[in-house]
Image (cartoon, rainbow, N blue to C red):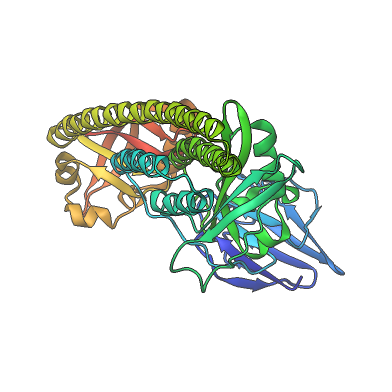
Length: 452
């Protein structure tokens, strides 16, 4: 290994040579690989080359070093495999070039709710389409086409059904998104481990980023094709798993969300009933052809077919009613959310106190008019600032972050700030941390009062 590539973080796309001996990594200017992130120590880690092997050494850094998602012990040399990834702060280093990673567009909570409602409406329409199809080959194509219509992030999709005679899965249809035929392979090399686990457990699987997955679960072709996100859901009918629907994205980590999995599962449940209907219809039609000479048996079989179709239609109708209720509930929730946001924004903007919302690294998310008046900035100017630029002493910033992230909040925390015109202010800050659902700290929000 002669070169290391930055495949994630602020310096993504850059590469650095690996020295014979020691290659240093850190924030200080004397490092071979300089990473200008505030969470990275001045001398964070070393890459140590010994003959054909490369080791990484954590120099007792504050944030540590992770290899393939596992944090290593400080002061211990750990050998690195060629396919391994090293994470230091927000930077990810690898020893192989990676395909460019597409970044999904930011989506607000309101947009996500609307998209989910739209997806449920589409599932409702798909249910009606599938209920009208009784030809299995035509049905499989329709199912995959409708999956592409429902979920815009999917690049490839396939349906695999269990052969009752051999007990093996066979691919009945596989497609790539229209318009991507030149860019993607038409042959889908799916992970047999993921498919088999879905079949055995009868539960859907969502893999948002394959780069963090156990390599034993992925086929070699998945890595070569740069498959980054995978969903696999079972086709279950009356408690029996008959097959799976498999979809993936190329070069798009975090390409699927939990709502996508819910929508795909809902569609698969509908498709399983429709496929069973189609199989039943096909079997009965063949039986009717064979018994054409026996009029009495033909009539009996026809009645049985009508009853079965009616039964399946009733099951589909129940699913449709459920989806209608889901849509209604989400529309009500969306309206309540909108009203709540309007009330919150009015209180926020009209408050006489200087209110702020920032990210963890200091970017302004929102401030009110009182904050702008206190510091003397316009809203356009504040959007291009970092909160650190308003501190008179950056040590105050470090003390503030340490205190608030330890306790979850601070009250009347004394900080000296600087206005746009250079005037220094003695202020008290009361704030709390903002966290994501998984517990990660997103930033801070609070109140600033001048006591100068």
